[in-house]
Length: 218
Image (tube, rainbow, N blue to C red; front, side, top):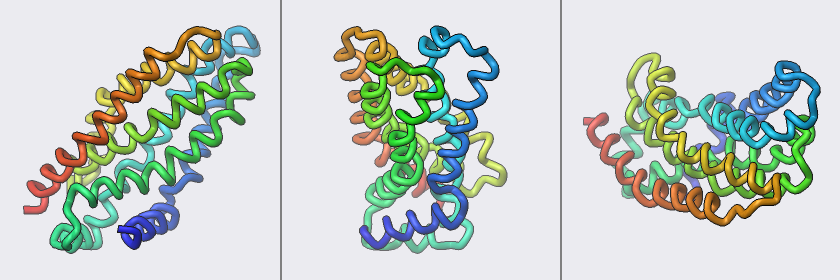
């Protein structure tokens, strides 16, 4: 499992789907939004949590089609399916590799990019906390979508259409945690709901992804 995780991390970086691509897109979003809405710091502070979460969600979408596509193209996915490692563990490792190369850098960069959005000082801890709790769900859901579209030519657009509705609860609760934290309000309820969504996806979707992969590999 460690060898497979190391391999996926190396492939993600070499294939251009590593943290640099997601961070670059995240930076572009946070830089362009102030130009679009104007220099009103009060307005920027109000919309900063939502914009940061939308940017993180879209940045995760950029590399979803590479989670399983590279293994499908070189034939290694068939070999991995016949290995002693269960497919549930395989897709879990794929999701973990995607989160390490995409989600974790976004979590670490969020406070820095929050400065560009005039995020209130009280909101920095909560934007990091919400992204840390919510981005694993984005990677697990994205892996499920990648399993559904593996082997389909030009399946990137279809993948985005499939996973975007599933991303909505995570984004809504994550942005609400950051917004309430920035305004000094109670965050326990949306944070608990966000954690519940993440725990539910981690517990259930690897089995669904493995079942879909078994069907696609027949």
